[in-house]
Image (tube, rainbow, N blue to C red; front, side):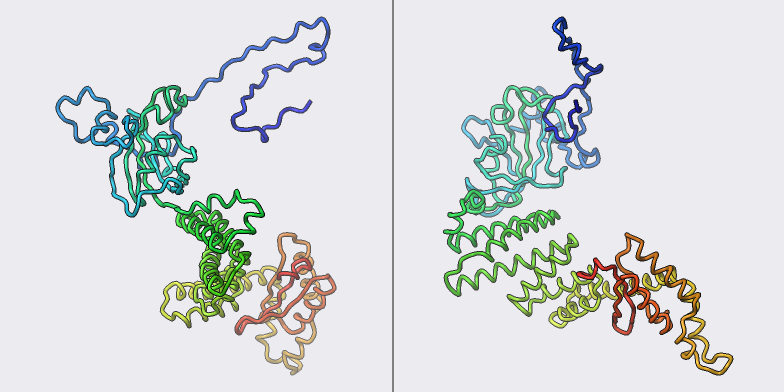
Length: 475
């Protein structure tokens, strides 16, 4: 009988390991009296630091322990009672109280809107938060009225404007009730929330789209699809601002697919589709560059250039993607095109400088790699290049037509080492370090070993590049 797996359990499942094994044969006998178990409760940890101490310190609410506006006679009041004096009720029974710290802008969030919020939650007599999106460094997103947060917090957010920061004091009946959530939330606990409404997504269609049937999606108008695509784009933008590039890329990709498959009624809808699609493609390319998904970024940029062949962002990001792939010639081409459009753009200037540095570093690495792999051949080439005449009066070029047997053996040994090294998929060799005879021999020996050989040029530099067969499709 195999022991239960430790990796496929739910986190909420409760398991107790036996201190001694059970004899199943003995247990199955008719005269067996069964087995008695004694369960010892594990000692609960008293550790209450759920977050990093330094980060918690930044989120301390010192007002909780020492309100700054105490008045004579307040000594008998609890911290929450003192704080509530500066608040106003937002529901009739006073179960949720509010104080605005920073005024927001625009309209109050709608009842079906999706809110992106940062919050800290505090228990009374504790100045560190029991829960905090800021400590997690990730805002939460809720659609009002769906019951994904406690009732008091849902009511609190429904009174806010974008950019607003407010404090809310939520009584137990609108929080975790009489039972609480031991050991973290005690019984009958009021909660003080400090909430920032970061963003409002006011498009209910986006939230409903995933519930649509295939038939409903086929019948969707372009206007509906555009609404969903714009909502996905806004979600992507928000995630990008929080440096969640992979999630942002997912939302951009979803919106791109929706627009590319949308049914268009006329040219005006096509123009609008292209306008929004261009934004999405550029944003997606940027995310993929951040994620080093260079090939996908190149695809995004080419689609963007199909819509607007003079788009400087698409040119620039295409250059960035080629630089990530160490394709310096194509990176130079596209960055130069971008610079021609915007000569003084600092980002383009910096990227071109980065390209020059990367190219120089690559050349140095290439030289170093060859020197390490073919030390004798390098010395031989340098010696022959520095000798203009041989002792019998013939030129150095005449001697280079012959590759010495010793050099052949060394080159063949190094090629074999490359072929057998599974970690290496390609090997560049600078031609300036080789004689013509050595180049011919390397090409012949590599071909006989089943390796692929190409002569490549980068500006004034020429070199051989050896590939293993499986790399030929995408060298």
